[in-house]
Length: 327
Ligand code: TXA
Ligand code: MG
Image (tube, rainbow, N blue to C red; front, side, top):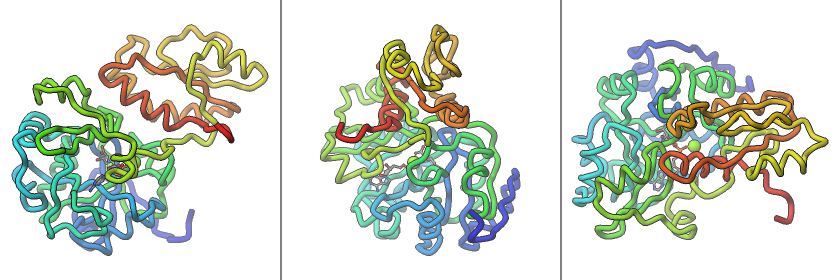
């Protein structure tokens, strides 16, 4: 898309990224989870540019990235003891907390919600950038709305070039899945999005089981976690790959799996030969993009074990699924 005719430049110049952001521009930034499309969270016109560049509906709120846990209270009310425990244990890191919003945060950022989503990212380039700014960064994942999230600067360049003036290149994201999103119901912690932190790790710190938000709660609180998302252009089917290969015997099949035993596939993408859930999570979005580019007519994927980061990978695969009409 060249309609905005802004030529994108890719590099590691933090001062340049900072000066663009100070001037109200938007910049793609690396995080340890996925690349984000960042703008000054306190400047509504910068935030509006994010929604336009991503073609994102304005009812879907944005996460606010802050330099350190100490600045949370500028944007959110006091943290409950459970929220404080999670922040102490996992910030900086792949955890987003839904907290009561203060009036310092524009309504456009939270889509009118009384909650603000806060995260202290861990990626060293982004941390340095945030420390050099006097404002927090609103940033959704840097993909066109509905497509797979980017885990390299090249992914962002391939899809948003001409729409943004700069991409801060921080290499490949080491977690590879978006942050886990936790909200609170009184003292109870509620999981709104499976993500880069395994539920088991969160529960160990909370000392209690984590309640999963119901579909109704997610529809009203975190609209972006509900709808079909992360979709490849090539239809993706999730299930027992052996059976799917029979069902799609006349198609050119790409297979995404945890093992390399599917000889019938035209193209095989193995998420982790060592069967490491962390490695599979790190490889997932790049693999989805490669499978999508493999000139196959369908992508067949099998769920990973439903534990640790496997749950978040399965969540993304479920939402990438091709939904047959009438199903
Ligand atoms: O790892 C991540 O979280 C990445 C990196 C860039 O930080 N960001 C990311 O943003 O995944 P996005 O916009 O793709 O997903 C954010 C999710 C959406 O489902 C949105 O609905 C929810 O967080 N969200 C954001 N602000 C919220 C708020 N104030 N209240 C409830 N949900 C919120
Ligand atoms: Mg996203």
